[in-house]
Image 1 (cartoon, rainbow, N blue to C red):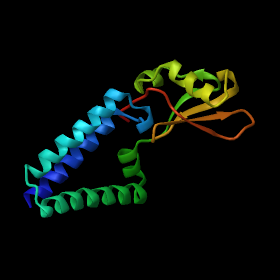
Image 2 (cartoon, one colour):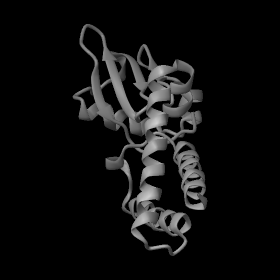
Image 3 (spheres, rainbow, N blue to C red):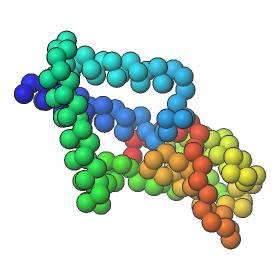
Image 4 (cartoon, rainbow, N blue to C red):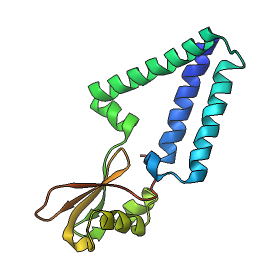
Length: 161
């Protein structure tokens, strides 16, 4: 039972840490951040199993974390308020071609991040953009005048929303 409690605690702690780090896709991580993720994974394994290398310990730890992921997924699906807490909510960064500087600061994004993502979508001038939204998964959605929504993975952005 101790193993299940440790696995649950570590799950919640890692979730909180990742939420605090913000909305960033795996492809947007620097090499150093990727190495840190591997280190975190090793530290999590050591703290959950406490050198118990038995098959039972591995099955219990994996089952506990899997169950918590399923519960989190169900709560996000079933309850709108829980979805905003668990997965974050979209944030408007640009409105009618103008960057919202206070929102950019809160999301820890530089204007260059938006411009880089816009260029990747073939947008060279933000005056052509009605809205840019930072989605909960870290992607930037560009809504231009008279066109459909375009998705881009954003630049170096992180948030704790």
